[in-house]
Length: 506
Ligand code: MYA
Image 1 (cartoon, helix red, strand yellow):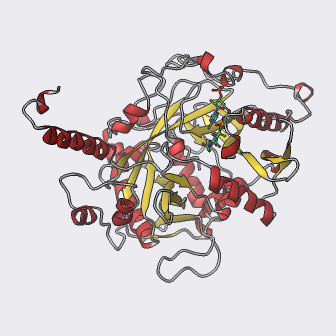
Image 2 (image 1 turned 180 degrees about the horizontal axis):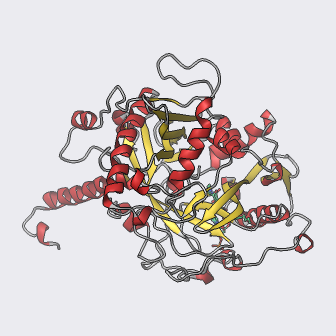
Image 3 (image 1 turned 45 degrees about the horizontal axis):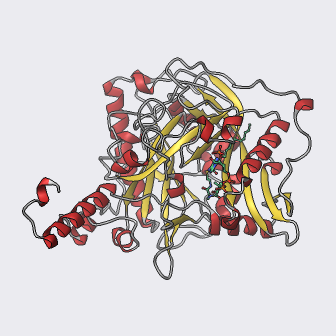
């Protein structure tokens, strides 16, 4: 019996147990809707897995578990293949299934993808929340400039033609430290719940790889909520409550023990008005300036997308919806992204930029089910102080971890203010929660703007590329112990530690 319970009646001891559980739950703070993108396998503890446990992944060009270290060289694991070496036919599927390429310009097919993912995509570990991407979101996320239709891959039941699995890739020019590679970003892998554990996922992954190879692409980046061989970094999710009551009512967050709901609501209140002079919604004419600001800002990180002008336009302009904004929320029909700039009132230079996107989740255990409207921080950038300038769009020098305390303080002060403003906009647009990861310079604002740790980690992977582990703004998986238990404690956040990740995956 533990010390605290020694002189207690059974009722009192039970109460203490409940209290301990309540404390544990409270320490989880806010849970991750992100979920399936969060249920980790412990790799340090007794559930330790090694390469031989990963029958599929041990056959793929990915780093072996434990192989990444501070002396890992940068480079491919396998050489690029000549076109004749690449398998020309699709991989065989189990009997009764067939491949299809989804045409997302076709409303019926777009709806099929949407319906498959709405019912079967990522859930948290106890199936309380599930991502609820919208059809507009898929169009925006999967059809960037240069997208390859052939990389929107579906599996249908041959007889009924019902869509039962999906995987996608989009092109991305990725800078990994000093190397720039035309790569693909793989996402939205989904197998219908009734077809799970039948080894369909490996066939989908091999097929998307084959189709990327046929386009001369041999590297990919992807994020997953589980530990696979082998992450190059990991970020932790953080959440900022906006509609506190709804989050508590739906089980997304709890009221801490020594607090009332009313006090929690007051604590989470955000200002009705923004505070940065010159802040306004992005206009089309700002796009070139935003592209430059962003590439100078991102040049400081280790893993970065190099965005063309068209990509900047797509990422920050094309998702703004069409038609008249709603008079209360300001949201346009079909809007998936929100982008803002700060125009210096005197010089008219664009000095700052931030954006967020909408990704609702369904709270599955409340009846009827409820939608949690979540905003996710997308890209953010601020002009660097003159002393830190010198990083240019073409620079490949990673500098974020060598910046002076003055530079860090300058960035922090700008970001904290911008994020308070982002929270005001998101609150006005009636989002319930604002989410961010411990990537880029986010650790500089998370505490000051009252974000709380979630219980999920997001693991980052590179296909057919090795590099030294990249700091994720939290304990590094390849160097330190990592797993669901530790992540759940919410204790891995070190505000002083930044991250080398300068890429945001949807
Ligand atoms: S992350 C989102 C993933 N989707 C979901 O979580 C939605 C809900 N879950 C499902 O739909 C299924 O459970 C999925 C697995 C489809 C995930 N990433 O078919 P199985 C390995 C990679 O029997 P199922 C996202 O979209 C697993 O370790 N591998 O399993 C990014 C085992 O391999 P091994 C995964 O549960 C995707 C094998 O699959 C994942 O029926 C990036 C079991 O297969 C996962 N999320 O289906 C994909 N989950 O034996 C990689 C399980 O080795 C891209 N597994 O342990 C790689 C780059 C390719 C392009 C390269 C170009 C050059």
